[in-house]
Image (cartoon, rainbow, N blue to C red; front, side):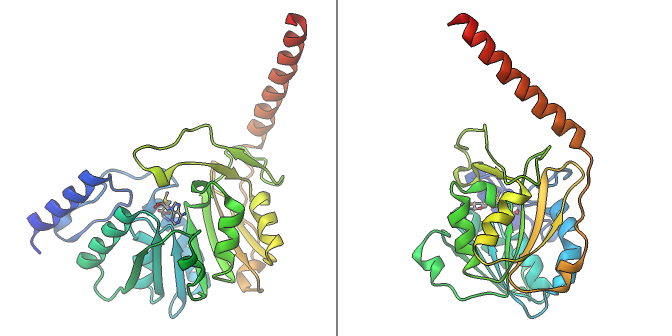
Length: 270
Ligand SMILES: C[S@@+](CC[C@H](N)C(=O)[O-])C[C@H]1O[C@@H](n2cnc3c(N)ncnc32)[C@H](O)[C@@H]1O
């Protein structure tokens, strides 16, 4: 494939649906050019996750990448020697992942399938050593059954998700997103933003006992490793950055005051 062929195909696929993952393909074609600063973007996310991948040891492991999107993390893990299956409900994302694999994936064998985690086909999948669940749990309307479905497939799960900017992280709290349905990316619609404790309590009910938390400096993109069995990773101290706690208090205080004012003015107007 020459440079024009690759750029043309990247543009064609991007015209059908904007690219999400930033890849640099042969001859310098970029799927989503521009600097990445947000912790939700694939290159930044990979930097945060790499030490965890090293601690788990990907070589020889079977990994299920749930909501793999355009396959960036699946291909990375395959490059580290894992046997990877990447699944996503969105066929266009899977088509892009397969295309990238065809130009970039030499020696990285990933099975990409279009699959809904709520489907019987998902339930019939083999079990895996590890499940990767990145940028996903805030994208499903029913996190409890989604998490239970994943938990049937692996005893260790790495979660990364959009949490609550200012907490509360230690209360089992879920906040329903104020955003509406994303018409341009239906399966990228935002639903519940879970605190660490909410996700952990769900997992405790389905047999997970060990957790390791990694926060980000803005307390926005949370990482949680969860396991049914002990692993040396769970002996590490959590990485929690306490910046933002004061803002949390002020935000909640403000909300509380607003509610009180509304009650009083409502009564006075009644
Ligand atoms: C925001 S993307 C995250 C992509 C990737 N894991 C990452 O971290 O960059 C969430 C993905 O979940 C997929 N998804 C949403 N609901 C799904 C479902 N029920 N079953 C499988 N995939 C789903 C979406 O199509 C989307 O590609």
